[in-house]
Each structure stands twice: as structure tokens, then as C-alpha cells.
Amino acid sequence: MAHTRLFALLCVAAFLCNGFSHRRFNGRFSEIPVTVQDYWFEQRLDHFAGADSRVWKQRYYMNESFSSGDGPVFLMIGGEGTANPAWMTQGTWMTYAEKMGALCFLLEHRFYGKSHPTEKWIVFGGSYPGCLAAWYRLKFPHLAHAAVASSAPVQAVLNFSEYLDVVQSSLARNHSNCPKTFKLASDTLIELLDHKENYAKITRDFNLCNPLEINSKMDLSFFLDTIAEYIMDVVQYNNDNREFEGVKNTNITIQVVCDIMANEVLGSPYDRYVEVIHTITKAAQEKCIEASYQAYVQDMRDCRWEGAASTGGRQWMYQTCTEFGYFQSSDSTSQPFSGFPLR
Image 1: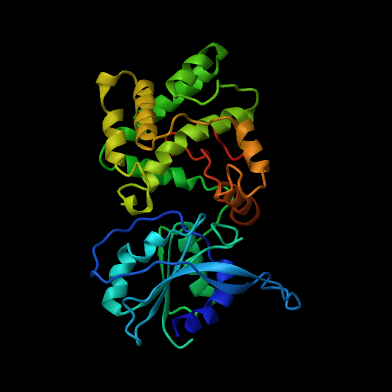
Image 2: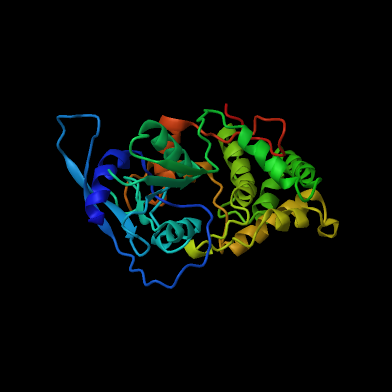
């Protein structure tokens, strides 16, 4: 019965949905035994070509332990990565499911992971999957009763410079000088990059996997963006309790990095920036930082499913370049970083 109810919606909706990589939920639930296993259904390859009858198998997960028979159906729309079955027993939506007697599904996006009509359906998602949840509800209101779209940038823009505006305001909440200190550190790094004799020092300071080489504007922008993204990630996933997904550095919060940036004993703002990056990479158990633009291009050109960027990086780059934009540039003047403009 549960499987039959699923197919009617998924066959229409699944081409919008995306694998699951992020978001923040934690909770305690009734001790009902739940067996999380892979389910598969036959999906159309092309929803826009009526004469194309080709199909493929798309993966999903199901938890019917709370289903009361007359409760709603919850559909978790995944993100730009492999669908994580941990979500079938964890997260705030499980609390909602228990209270409402809901049947729960998690759908994996095509190209990610292993995915080479009378009930009320409620769709969930966070960040990009949050956009998918909102857009799905907007496009198919007769199929989705509601959508919970957490932190969803539903207005897709090419130059998403506002992203770093939010980073700045978030950094300033507990430490008003934190964004200013990061700006001083970022400016110092750019000054050091003006002289090649500093490249060896920068390589050591940031523990780069390969000696720093700057031979083009793209080399420079890619390096600066790579380092700044460590701070962006701390802000984006601040206190999001993702341990159940296997994320290793959830203890590194805005408070932690801003405490380091405020500690003058550690030296200049640049020295503190270096210490922040060391703290983050150590918590994430990263041996070194890969900041080479040429290496990145090489990874993007590797179209094998076993490639270094095959778990989601290459797919997401394709989607942003062809569908959404969302390029998080340093073009705004209301944020602390420089060196990676849109153009």
C-alpha cells in the first residue's frame, strides 16, 4: 500500500528532487524498530518527451513506523549528494512524523548516489533542496499540501554576492569586530600574494597540498575562494548538529572561529586567520588543502563515476553553470573577503 501511494507522486516529482548532503536536525524519538533499506522504483528518463519510453531505477527510502493510516505523507527532497538513510530515523521531521502519524519518504536525486493522491503530502528540504521543496509546492499545489523550505534561496541569481553579506552579519552577532578582523587578515593575504617570494610561506601557513602557483587571475581567485570557503561553511552549518550524518567538524562554530580571531596573543589578524584554518582542517581530519585551480579543472573533466568529484562536486558545478548561478562572489562591499569577483 505504501509503495503504491508513493509512485503516483514520485513519477511526477522526482525529476525535480535532489540527493541529500546537508542540513541540520537532531532529536529523540519513540523506540520503534526501524529497518532502513534501499527501495527502487521505475522512473521515466525524460519527463518532457512523451514519445520517449526509456526508464531507469531511482532509489528512495521509507519509514512507515509512525504511519497511522490516515496521517499525512512526508516527502524529504534530498540535496546535491548521496541520499543519507540516517534521515529516516533522525531529524526534526521525525518528531513531526511521530506526532502526526506520517508516512515518510526520502528521495534521491538522479545522477547522485546510486540513482544513475489522496493523502496530504508535505515536502521538506534545506538550502538548495529547500528551493526544490518550495518550487514543487508552487508548481504542483494539487500534489503537495505544504512545503518546509529551510534556508532556501528561492530566487536564483547569477551573482550571489549577497551570500557573503549574510556571512558578515552572522560573524558579527557575538563578536562585532570579527568581520573587520577577517577583512584585515584577508587584505594581508592579498598583499602577500603580490610577491612570489611569499608563496612558500603561504604554502606552509595554510598547509597546501602542493606548492602555491599563481599564473593567472583564475589561479588567484580560486585560491582565495578556497580559503574563504572554510569560513563560509562554518557560518552556513553553524550549530547544525550533523553528527548523525558523519560530519566530523560540527564543533567548529562561529563562536569558535571568532574567539580565535579576537585572540591577540596569537599574533596579527593574518596569523589568527591561519590558526582558524588549521583548527577547521584538523577537526575535519583534512591532511592538506587542495587549492590548485588546475587540479580542480582536471577533476571537473573526469567524467567517471569513480572520479574525485563524482560524489556531487562535478554535478553541482554543472547545475550552477547551466541552471541556477548562485555564484558566491566577493563583489559586495558589505563583507570581509576579496579577490574572487564574478568576472
